[in-house]
Image (cartoon, rainbow, N blue to C red; front, side, top):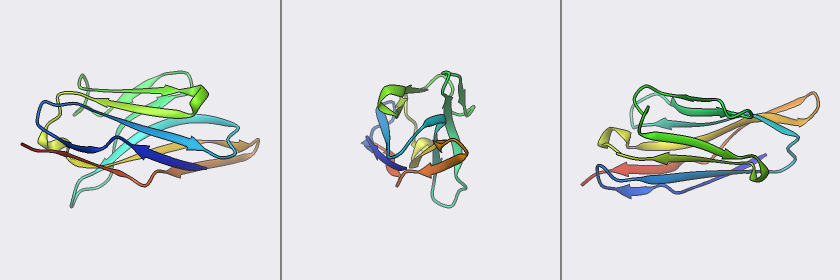
Length: 119
């Protein structure tokens, strides 16, 4: 299963960005789609996750500012980021877990997309 991310870039504090991650390949079903981020010198952390049923989970640091959503028909997950802060600067990674065929699961990562929040 391959993941292709897009939407990162440079934005001023208070600005917005939307990240996208499209999964392709032999996919039977997807359990959960997530976004993680890793800042220089820091560990990778979970930003937001969404299950196949639409249940969401957010890191405390992004609650109220970020929104995760998914298009099941397109196997695509989005992360809308509003009110961005310099501390949101990081490489953002998409993660998708699901089933290729009954009994064979997958856990795939995207290549990462840089988000820089700076004036």
